[in-house]
Image (cartoon, rainbow, N blue to C red; front, side):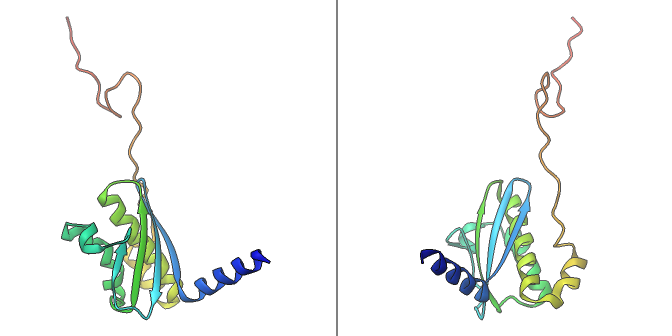
Length: 143
């Protein structure tokens, strides 16, 4: 009996909310788009202005919304973890783009052409033994 209640709750959420997962470097963002909103963006239970202090990070996050003219159409709730601020901003942008496509299929060509759907594959290179960092070697001494 409890299992049927869980199924009903998840189907109800899926009808009203569009989900998207975005990734960049070590950051993972889970994005929820709620239709009929007024354009507020909440990241880890904080408004975007409190979470990202730099305007460039806010601009990166809002890029898919500005491109598709849907800034005041959805409320966006994000849970993001891992990585630094730039990686998190890129992951949120990727997640918003994926959720927008689920919300409105006709935006796919526009978002894909801008390059917001492709995951940035660049990762930090691992440190190798005998070296100080990934490629930096210790200083050579002749004597």
